[in-house]
Structures are given as C-alpha cells and as structure tokens.
Image (tube, rainbow, N blue to C red; front, side, top):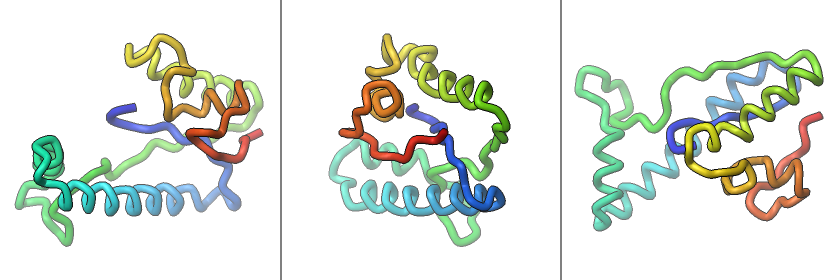
Length: 127
C-alpha cells in the first residue's frame, strides 16, 4: 500500500512483536531517507524528503519521520480469524482501487500463498 503496510507474523515469544516492528521501521526508514538524500537531483526525491521533515517543535534526535509512531497489533487466536485477516490484507489494494485483483499487487503475499510464487517476496508461510 502506498501509505501503510500489513504484516502477518508469528513472533516467538509473542512479546517481541513491538521489537520486530520497531526494528523493521528503523531499518527501512534509515535506508529510505539515505536514498532520498543521496538522490536529491531528482525532483521527486526532494519532494518526498520535504514531506518527511518534522516541524522544529517535534525535533528530538530526528529531523524526519518516515513512519507513524504507532502500529496496531491484532492477536489472532483461530484459523478462521487468520484466514479472514489474510483475505483482508490481500484484498486491501483492490478495495483501494490500486489494482483489479489481489495477484496484481506486486508486494502482496497473495502470489506466495496462492501461486507458490516467491519471485517478489520470499517468506515463511504463517499457518
């Protein structure tokens, strides 16, 4: 999704969910910001970097924010709920009008789950 992502994971132990999300956001933000700063000769990179600048009143150690601070965990305790959430995730780009079918969204796990295609995303199947 252009403005958010969905992640289905089974952390062991379950209490590590926040740490996993924190590290994912930190590593990706660092890389995205570096790429944008290093490529400011491209107008879209300058524009995107400008959109991520924090106002002076928010500065602590950071001057940019690539991700929102919060995330919304949802515990799944049944196979029915897991399939419901997976279906929601796969159909979200369709619902938003970005593609006409789930398999067209390149960054979706749909191709992995339904076509056994790991060419774009390699992952472990969550069962």
